[in-house]
Length: 406
Ligand code: FAS
Ligand code: PHB
Image 1 (cartoon, rainbow, N blue to C red):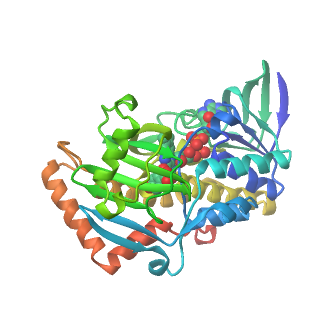
Image 2 (cartoon, protein in one colour):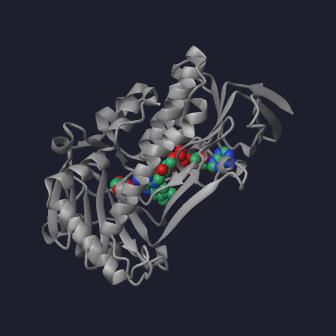
Image 3 (cartoon, rainbow, N blue to C red):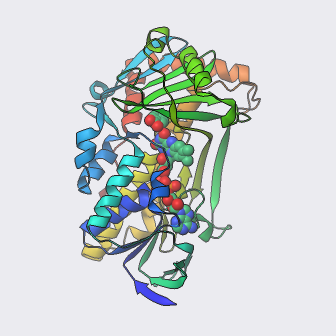
């Protein structure tokens, strides 16, 4: 077995792992990333598209914002439509200047990969059997196999950035972990197409036919989603059927702007709210999807991963720059404050914007009554400036946690 060492071992080369690695490296904190797939496989996952103000600022701090600032689209507003009634949430005006950036997760991941490669930082792709050890000790290590050779990676800390199906969360003993989960009775059918967006800002639409989201990646590439039953299969949905259903669910004046074309990606994703507490175990820290999942209705998944990265980066920087280890034990509590806020907002938006059909017990009340409550609540928020301000603040993202407040 070959022994190597670093200060921070990072498991996973998704956006969490790459962004953490980049930020730490710029502070002179050595790190090695272990990724079980190839880089191309990671880049092949079409996922998020909206970056909160805080995430965009963190990308700039990481020194990899050149393409994002050149090609990303700043969105100063977002539109919510309920049964044809359109309400624009003026993000910039209601938050005193904060906005979101429309820039794909794939692009951010690629920019981070290229920056890592340019800095000759070590990443082991196709690392197999990655396993953290002795994480409760002050000498944790990670074993893995790479190109037929066995490795032991000695480190000070392990960052579990390995997503929902990774090994890190499972490393925390079951009796220590509390997992909270809500699985929604529907999924999202997503489509990517090289067609110009139907509107200059995002549109979340609830109609009698169900939910639809009109998003985008650039002036020539659109991203759309439809709420579908969990029983639907991708083969049930031709491109033509998708376009027809999308137009039914959007306001008529928007639907007529929809430019159809062949899909370049189409997939169905289940929706769940999930949180694992605690998000750490000794010197193992869970980051991003390894610790939590949100329904994408609030555009929070990737953004909550980024706020975990920001918290862990600040804590580890203090350890290495000043020897101040006070915050090590507080990572989970600090990260969870913003995680639960994002979880609630995503759950709330999902409740407001989706048709729950015949699901009986939503909070212990029947679907019809639940639907009436949600319709009334959403009408209040959309028709009140204070309500629109709440939505705007949540959508652009609350400020990242400040360690000095702890
Ligand atoms: P990731 O899952 O992205 O990355 C984890 C990495 O760890 C992967 O590369 C994986 O290969 C690797 N890994 C796993 N196990 C390992 C092991 N044992 N050893 C080594 N490596 C291992 N969020 C939004 O904000 N908006 C959206 O529209 C949106 N849409 C989504 C659609 C889908 C289908 C999915 C699944 C998620 C979506 N998300 C969305 C959420 C998504 O963007 C995540 O929040 C984001 O990918 C989180 O990044 P990471 O925490 O890096 O986890
Ligand atoms: C996307 O563009 O993929 C996207 C945007 C906003 C969401 C979810 C997904 O809430």
